[in-house]
Image (cartoon, rainbow, N blue to C red; front, side, top):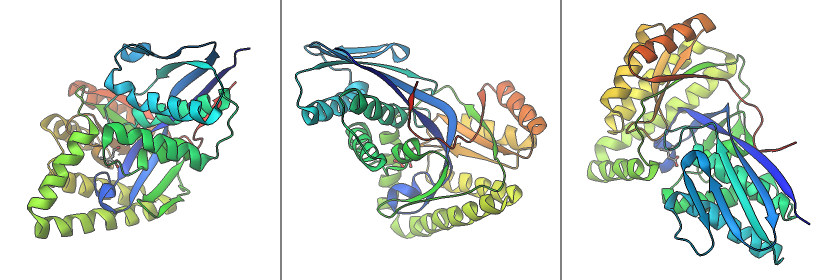
Length: 317
Ligand code: MEV
């Protein structure tokens, strides 16, 4: 008999603290209402991975496309644990553009862990889903902080510090965020290595920047908790300045950020690893958000209005 299970997990925007979080500083992250879906079907024999949106396919015996390596690891681990002679087919569908800073690969890894474990009759806790997705992420990102698979697992808004865990942040108001996609992509690992090199080359100069980057997140979490969006916006602007100093912004990101600010955003910054990918703009209301979205579009970016999603990983009906 074959079983079919579909699970989904949300993508994210990092409000503050990307890159700093890799080096032990806190980060403020929000799950968004754009998800990755993974369908898992138990079959007679073969193990297969289909990701038609990404134009990727793999089955046992074929060369493995590198972006599918994390999924293969998840399948192998869970098949080993199930210890049943069964094959599996998984199919990935994602609303998140890959390598753009919105946590697409982590959301896919989390949704895959949830759907495959369920299809094989393995009960995993949220912690275990997160751990396996993080292990899988390490294949492509080398030194991930863990923030991406964590937010995809738990949802909502969280303040996270590597090695210490997270606290959920209850936002007093629903933040209105417009994402602007530059259209270009950079693997997270490449950008993380770039920052690491700069940090090692200039330790005395970089240390206060990292301290400021961490402290800024603590203040941003408090601003969101009490609903002071103006203060949060200012902190996003400062955060972008620090990220520029780390060398991860680009001319296109800066252009979209300045256009968003001029159109009335309370604050704007790059989000995720940078080097391309996405920026975010915090807006006080829907009218401003529409104006900001139009400004991003006129500037050659692809705007996307996102909302907070309080649900993390879930099984779909
Ligand atoms: C990626 O979404 C954010 C980075 O801080 C990398 C990480 O935390 O693993 C750049």
